[in-house]
Image 1 (cartoon, helix red, strand yellow):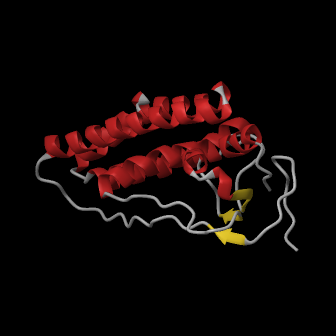
Image 2: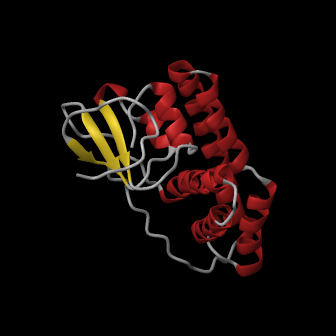
Length: 199
């Protein structure tokens, strides 16, 4: 028996399915063409913002305006000036590749949010990881998978990003079980809006 905190009401019964995401191994290297590398980041950032816009519309259709706002917030995070300038600094002044710069800044911002006293702000640590992960996947050419199951399942994961949650086939989901997260996390809010039991 594993006990946890319920963040979305309901009961789900069925087989347990462990969600596996594609792993991106980030290595650091020195780039010669700084401007080209900065443009790589800008292109990936623009693609991420477009993808988040599509997810916002999907969320609006499936779960309403509040759910859509989660992805609109992620769009704003992706083009946050402090975030962008920190990445630019590593590319232009350290000659780091875009992947390493994004990964490094994501860790810094994640730790900054995670250390805050306010629970809502701590919840934003996961959001910055989600946004950065999307940009990294674009830079690395990684496509995330869904659920490879013929029957509905209880989806277990370390944590689920809102973008992962909204893209899943809801007909295959009986409930979410995650190791991390909180009742104020965007994924918990999304689960409640969609009526999916979550622990």
